[in-house]
Image (cartoon, rainbow, N blue to C red):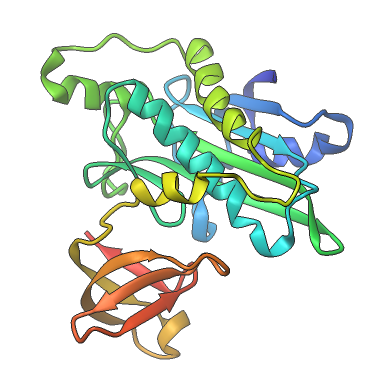
Length: 256
């Protein structure tokens, strides 16, 4: 593992893309502050400087078929969740790869890939993990951090964590899972570890089918998550009438 610490950059993912051809697999770029941090759905990732971990990891998963690219996402989300569990926190994966503590978001990810024929050539996982930040901009609906969770657990005021000590712990969990990648492009046990942490699995909740799914106006409904389709990584949601619908990313929203 080689960690490159940056005081400021536009985005650690963009920094990784600029340097991918001259950097070994496993290189990590971590910035104290990003001027153009990016999240899913084209959103910005907001993070106070020097308080959180905003980093990107370079993978060269040449044994992974393009159709199985969700494995990198699952490796990263399970790895971050396992790190948080080491802190005594009950981490859940909000499909596909956000990490929640209770009903509040502690981590977001942006996974970007390039292909070579029918396999992955490069994957860059951009990860933003709230660590020491206690107050957030009001436009963020439900953020939380590691130290605020520790304080809420009744342990009293928590000291800020040393980011330079915490990042290797997070990446170790991710790299340990990646190291289990077999020649056939599978990671034994990963699917079970991912599903065991899936947020709202088997619980009744409100969802919204977006215009990407309906082709028109969004449509709210009540249902429960029953799993993730193995071949396509679509979210499986059982509706009140017993029908199971399958959703790609952007086709469904959680109503929290």
